[in-house]
Amino acid sequence: MVSKGDFQFNNSIFAAYFIFYYMRNLLGLLVLFLLLLASSCVPTSKITYLQESNSTANDSLIVIRKIQPPYRLQINDILSIQIKAPIDPDLVKMFNVQGDEGNTRSTQGAGLYFTGYTVDQHGDIRVPQLGKIKAIGMTVEELRELIEKRLLTEYFKENANLFVTVKLDGLRYTMVGEVNGTGQKNIYRDQVSIIEAIADGGGVPITGDLTAVKIVRQYPDGVKTHELDLTSIDVVYSPYYYIQPNDMIVVNPKPQKALGTGTTGLSSFTTILSVFTALVGTVLLINNISN
Figure 1 (cartoon, rainbow, N blue to C red):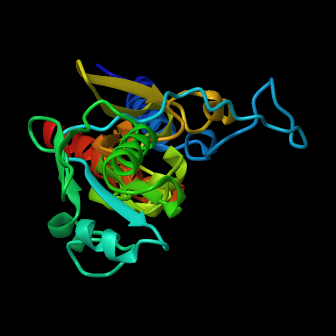
Figure 2: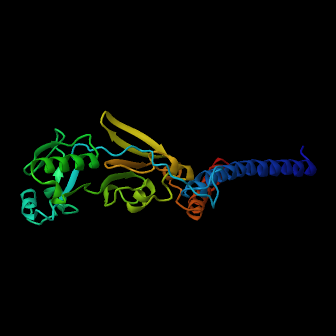
Figure 3: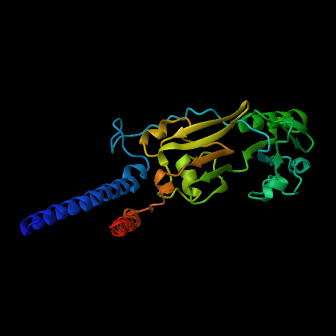
């Protein structure tokens, strides 16, 4: 026969076991909650551009080494070619298909696609009177010198004050991945850094990985991929800091993007708290059913 004291003792043991069982499950859920919260937080160091490194100081002068080779023309590049000769304006009109002296096929923007000089599949451009000129593999400066030399040799005199300019149709590049503005962009400048290109293209959201931004670049022998860490100030020393025409900039998402836990600490906390509450409720419901 069980005495009253034995019954109270057994109840105390059961209550202690019950409390320990639930506390253990809640502790496990709490640990899971904290781990999820920690993994979902995006540290400031991962979203800040050009952070100071051990080799730089805030007031130090950063000397950017422009060691990248000059861009060489590729198939489908579009060129603007301008020819001026004040002494022989009538002769200039022979090379001017638009009838505007000194502005030979120089329309900017989309219009240059129809009126500019395109490097065809054979690597040539067709210039009035001069015919086909092999442009592929040349720099714009080399092509300018070639056109100017032929004009002086075949048409103009030395005292004609001939002035020839050859420029690309802006600096075209493409942005894909975790960026605010995907697609092809165009900047009308001769030199653009990757950070300027990203900013002009809409920037990178907090879910984009700035530590491993890829540049997919075309070369005569194929395509190569280069990776840059835009959170480090040392990126300015990279030979790929300045983009080239037809580059593709690829930004991958951070792991937090795949988790879907939000883009800020508050949104992450709110999302994970909801998951944690649901898990606690599920555990309590299962235990009540089993009892």
